[in-house]
Every structure is written in C-alpha cells, then in structure tokens.
Length: 253
Ligand SMILES: [Zn+2]
Image 1 (cartoon, protein in one colour):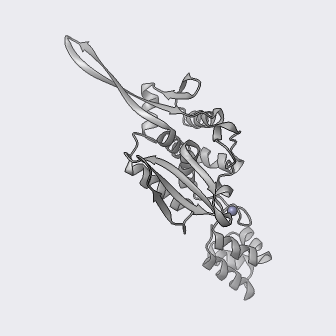
Image 2 (cartoon, rainbow, N blue to C red; image 1 turned 30 degrees about the horizontal axis):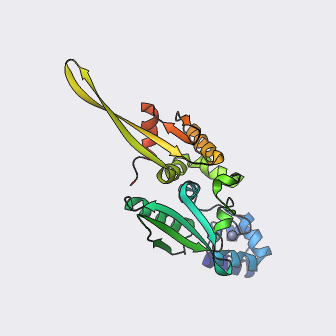
C-alpha cells in the first residue's frame, strides 16, 4: 500500500508531463498503478487516507505475513463489532498468563493497519487486544451476525493466497488462540533404569467445522500429519509432526 506522499509525488510528476515509463522508473511504481492513479487521482489519494488495502483502487493485499497471523487469531478467538459512526472494533482475546501472546497479537494488528493505535482492554484473567477501524470488515469479510460456528466461514481467494504463502503464521494464530500444546509423560524402564519420556502434542478445538477444515488445510499445506480424535478437535501427536509444528507455533509465548 503506497502512502499519500508517494501518490502525490507520482501525480505531480505526471502533471509535469513526465511519461508513465519515466515516472515508473523514477519512483519504482508499476505503470499499471500509475495509470490507475492518473485516471482517478481523488480515489488514489482517498485510498491512502483511509489506509485500507482492500478499498484501494486497484485492491491490494495487506501485509501478508502479519495478516496470516491475525487471520488465525481472528478465526480462533477474535470478534468484530460495530460501534458508532461506522467504526468497528476488532478484539482478540488473550489469556493474561501469556503476555507475549498479547504483544504478538498487537504487533500483527499494527502491521496490518499501520497508522492505527492498538489498545489493551483488561478483563477477568483475559485481556482483549483491540484496534478500531472502519475497514476491519474489508479485511475480515467473514464478519457477520452471531457466533462463527453458526454461519459458513469461507475464505476469499485473496485470503487463501496469503494463507498458502504463510501457512505457519496462520497456524500460529489458530493454535495460540483456540489451541494448546500439552506435554504428557510416562516412565519406561530401559536397561533396568527408569527413564522419563515426554510426549508433547497439540490440540485445536473449535465448534466451527469450516474453521477446523481451514486448520487441517493449512496443516496439509505444510505436510503435518493430524487426526480428529473427536468431532470438535484436531490433534497433532506424531513426533515428527509435533516437531514440524513447533517450528511455526510452539508453546504460547
Ligand atoms: Zn476498506
């Protein structure tokens, strides 16, 4: 997403009579974007004003790395609500035992919406990381009335593209909001000596079949084996699968 300053200087160069090719070379901006801006300068400047990549003309993608993470958090334990004057709040609920998780959620929110302030709203044992913006529904079109498991949750093609590019970030968001990593252990006697063995495993629990399917799709993208031990739960338990997921998720920070 190009900021207003860049857009203004591009429009200025074009107004001075610089060719599209020359302006494109000078600013490192594609000819296609420059053509769009010169055809509708007001739209181009307004798009920079609200900072929404999806309302930009042509539509753009948000910061993909941060977005994949925030999308996972949103689908796991995030809520969008309409406030006054067309402003929406995006709240991601994070257990107070994991301050690192709150910091990470805030960082991803800030990257997806650079000029916005991120708030921490304390609750009973659980704080909400919150951002206010008119355009949250543009970035999370899954927003709708009622609980997520009561309606279909289908990603748009641009969202699927981002998850395909960063499945690990998406899974990090999902598992750190609606999942857990637990360690079972057992004692086995090897050569007469009792030895403690630990078995870490992951669980992801969500009431929405669509969201569970998105979780297993992302696991498949990374070639990570999973099982469904009960109707609402996905587990990752095989040693090499846990190790692979650890490189992307790990314990809650
Ligand atoms: Zn928008």
